[in-house]
Image (cartoon, rainbow, N blue to C red; front, side):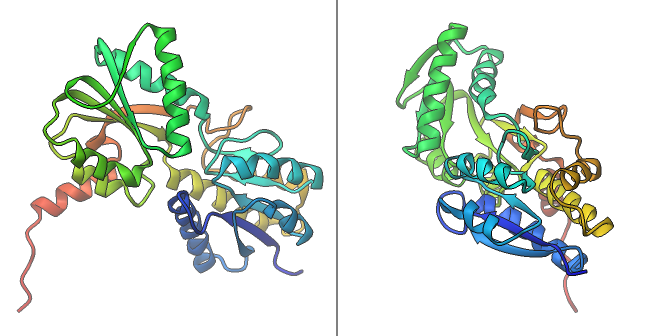
Length: 292
């Protein structure tokens, strides 16, 4: 029997490339460790890619990072009976998603500000579509909770700085000299830009609203469970394959999608990822040996 072909849909350019890089790294890891499980074929995420994937006769599809593309793609996959795995985005059945529901992100930011005893929340945001949309949702949530909202710069109580993670270090440096009791940012320690953010935020009262589990763990669980299912039975297709993937996932998926017990947490930025924090601490305390 031939090796099952799996379509990997990832953004190869544009603002979501970092998420695609995480997905491709996990696929490469499996290619090296279990090359016989599947033939992983990469497609750039563009409108219409779902029709190309379905026409290609693939066993399953994994990926998607752009909600505007994924929304229409999910219906195409559903009609074709093609199992779709979403480690990067929330989705709707029958697609399998390991990602948290983004509708609760604004609530998490507002709740964090209230828990930090904010009398008012100042919001500054980048001009990308995701950040401006989140700023609008946060303003609506603030009205519901009675939290006063402000915009602009200066000094004050609590600042929510909304921007893609790779942009946050520069935005923090641009606000040097301002004094805030707390700064809220949206992060994911699985993205390559996380370490640069931690460095830029050193000494600042930065709190992270972050997905748990992180992007790397979600992606690894999705890709590994698909590889395990196909290694056990390469003939699996459609709903039977999706069911086997769920049973092999290292992270339990809830009935409405997303990792059961997962969601959004709020942590001091330096404490978001204990493994990364320990590595940074070791780098500072372990002396370098001299070659002789």
